[in-house]
Image (cartoon, rainbow, N blue to C red; front, side):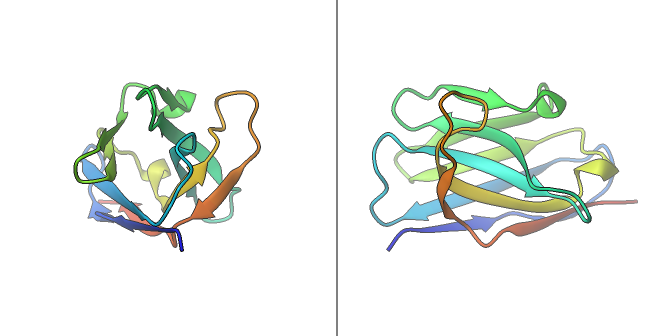
Length: 123
């Protein structure tokens, strides 16, 4: 059974930083990408970033470029999302998922999802 478990969320002040971690387990096809998504209150879920497990290629949504960094630790089998210069509008539930990448074509969606973790940016 594939599971993705997020950790590292919480409350942070505007301008602060957080690092989210995603711990995938189970058998995930080698060509699957690990991605981060988020859903803010009253808004649709949106893609944040993704990383290829085969070649380390990355993608970021425009509003995250320069502030967020996705990385992977293959030895620990973890995927990280370093979030800097956080803004109140970054407040959302952040999800880790495995499948395609919304920034790459073709995109067929994600097959596996974590339960999500809340990030609140507030003074």
